[in-house]
Image: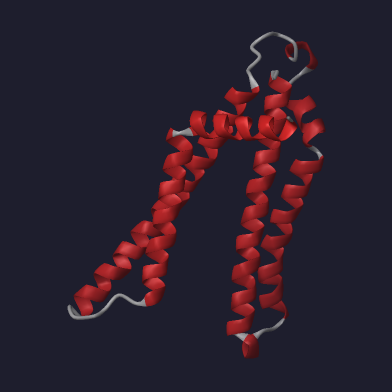
Length: 170
């Protein structure tokens, strides 16, 4: 793999990130529409659709325009200037980046959940933790665990995927 291939993978990963952000926006928009059905007007719809449209357009530009972006990012005189990396190394880097993203995106949420539990205990020391709070704790914990596995065990995980792919080709 050369630097151009690696830059192409980076553009596609960024496009996937924006698609995930669009899905988050879509789900929160649908929940808001269902919850505030009687108060919905055009401005609320535009308020929800504008970020969704921006995320989707950014994802489409990055995914389908990745080749042009790569040609702009990696000039032609530096494309073949050595420094090639293997596919396993690129995959390990990609898994590590996804692991970092999961870890850093989970940190604000775990702080929010812990603060919510703290406030509940301050207001009433005998209060039980609600089901949705327990679900939030489980979801954030799973994201932190998955992010740690992807970050720390990226060579092992990409090695397993390569072995599975090789088994499928036989």
